Image (cartoon, rainbow, N blue to C red; front, side, top):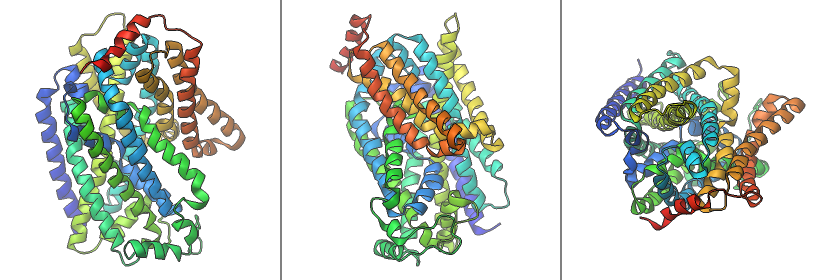
Length: 516
């Protein structure tokens, strides 16, 4: 066993013990359904801010997006991190956090489907939303496993990837099933601190590498870069240093919009606003979360943009998904300090993935246990029964996403490509307009959900018939952005031509903004 492997195992064991302890301590505060799902609506600014940020960024951002876009686009890819911090975080908190907290409290809504049912008086909408969450978010969590598993395999080449996936699954299941949202929120705080320390250390190490030579050296060396012979993705120094992405400008814009505006309709992100305790906490949380997201996002893409220099322009055998793991081994593979930093970075990426995984699993489990099954039953379920079922389904969904990730089931792999865009595309219109306008009708909200499905579904069918499914999957960012835009436009448009049948109930709901 090498020193790098030994230090990583020690760090992993310490991390696992801390996470398990937080889960056990949180168990006593999560015995009610409100406590398990939204922390009793009493979570503070720092915890909520870090929960939002760590859910936003998983190992997929580092291993997939930052490696791929940094390698292909260069410096311009940093705009994705800036967009995520300003549009996906700051603007989301400013526009929606307080309104979401007040309205969901007024409606006593614990989940996104629950919000739809009580805001629009529609059990059918609740069922449809719950099904969409289940179908598309569980496969998304499988992508988190795959990204992290490949990273640990780079450090432990003799260990199968599925072994690391299993360790991640078991660790997540322990504290999530035990402590619910409270456990995930406080583990997110710990994970967030680890992520910030790790990213700062990695940026310093990357910029200090001989092939990079600091910020000025990065720009100069990229400007003089020439692709090596046989490079499957050849590029020029002018492309890599173009601040607006050069020939990738359009692609860059769509990715910024998808990964930034997409958070506005994702239930695992919006759920953080249900749980924050008051307006003062929201004001503080807005600043904390924005700083966190900018540091992590920009740091990840800065590292990715330096990858061609560090790896000598040679794409690793595993393709763009192996870029960041290869950079880590090159930059931190030698010397005691480098090995210690490597262990910290591995825990950073583990933290990023587990925080996203736990949020997605909790959202999916609650959608089925709290929204779908009770809506389909004739008899009302007791809160205790829903509580037990939610815990059980958290365990089941962790297991399912692990199986999906290890088996490479074709339909599941396909759903991963569309999950972020289609879920946000379905929910963003009904969710946002429901917060701001009394005139939005049930039919208008339905049209927003259905239009999101149709935009992605019809586009996928047409492109697949013409150019094959792989071409459709490559267009998934554009489809997701289009679905969100159509949902935001069609909800108020359809509402103009339809009427609310219960205006008095809607008026009563909107009194929440005059209450503290």
